Image (tube, rainbow, N blue to C red):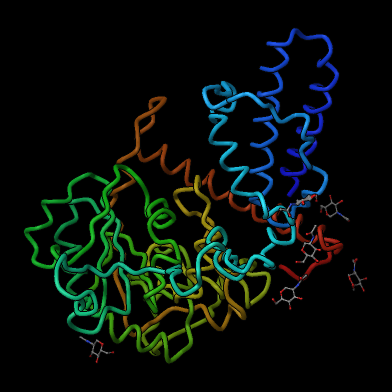
Length: 419
Ligand SMILES: *[C@@H]1O[C@H](CO)[C@@H](O)[C@H](O)[C@H]1NC(C)=O
Ligand SMILES: *[C@@H]1O[C@H](CO)[C@@H](O)[C@H](O)[C@H]1NC(C)=O
Ligand SMILES: *[C@@H]1O[C@H](CO)[C@@H](O)[C@H](O)[C@H]1NC(C)=O
Ligand SMILES: *[C@@H]1O[C@H](CO)[C@@H](O)[C@H](O)[C@H]1NC(C)=O
Ligand SMILES: *[C@@H]1O[C@H](CO)[C@@H](O)[C@H](O)[C@H]1NC(C)=O
Ligand SMILES: *[C@@H]1O[C@H](CO)[C@@H](O)[C@H](O)[C@H]1NC(C)=O
């Protein structure tokens, strides 16, 4: 809206300039100038039309500005639009210059404008709009409605992999039944080699070198694209899954109403957080005790409302929120775990750890070694430093965003209940 009002102002200025310089110019030059101005006006006019609520009543074209000569061979070098194209576009708008028509409340009922359609698709009849998708593989022949033989997979599991981890991934994938779509993100460019595994042929392979799990997730797991799946697993490649059964995991997550979850972690030694350690005596836990002073509130991370980023599982709705929170440039995702709670309410009840289906974190340095040696530091050091830096950046972006929001609605940010 703001940009378009600027556009309108610019057109008015141009018209003023045109009028002032009119008298001073030689006929040829004037004509050229008028043509240029006119095309500029039409161009601005068309841009303005793309925002339906813009009032166009002040932009009536003075008929004196309309040239009589044949202009079809003249091109406006600045805008790159041929005059003829612009004139055609203008004439197609004739008989349709009522701004409320543009707003979609048609006196001209032959034009489609459905404000409830997804943004940008308002010109389409709603029944043709396919705003969501899936990752189901289809055949090139036959009836489309017979492409999927069995019931389509309801869950999606993604692994970010290098071929060196093939045995581990092979073991992991085998824990996921035909009810799962399998999607591999390859950070080492080796994709076809995976075909030695039978399951690889029904998996989806996405390859982009040296990227992280969250980079892929942001680009290839848009909530509208994975809307077909009830649950989405976004997992690292170094997880031991001997004690894990995916169907049973889903059953427990449903039973306990977990929107964001992860399997409990073994072994207990060397783990950073109490929350994600497996407990032997229960199906699921949603809170824990940490070292003294670590939790300002027992309902807040890292004591509750918290899972780590190595093996998270998201419900469809939770993922729709989390995807929006992932920053395009903060590829390591550090800090995301502490912010997940902002996506579900109440977080301390809907985020939890499944203890009876657990995994082993093997801490194989993998992508960390894909860094670059710099300033005499080992590649993994540079990666680790960036992880920490991203964590701080994410935190400050989040708190700035929250402060800006509260300020915008007139609440003292220091007095909000967001913490
Ligand atoms: C377009 O609007 C102008 C002024 O508002 C009016 O004079 C003209 O008749 C309108 N054209 C059509 C086709 O409605
Ligand atoms: C524009 O359309 C509205 C409602 O469709 C109508 O009330 C108004 O008179 C129209 N204005 C012009 C200039 O045709
Ligand atoms: C828009 O169209 C609807 C139905 O066609 C009508 O009820 C409503 O009054 C219109 N609104 C305006 C502002 O013309
Ligand atoms: C896959 O899902 C269907 C329907 O929910 C279920 O009946 C079937 O047991 C599942 N397959 C496995 C291997 O659990
Ligand atoms: C809120 O707190 C910050 C730092 O704690 C302070 O700089 C700021 O002035 C406070 N704002 C208001 C409106 O009190
Ligand atoms: C916070 O807001 C509440 C209600 O809006 C008010 O009663 C209270 O005094 C505020 N506290 C501070 C420190 O501004």
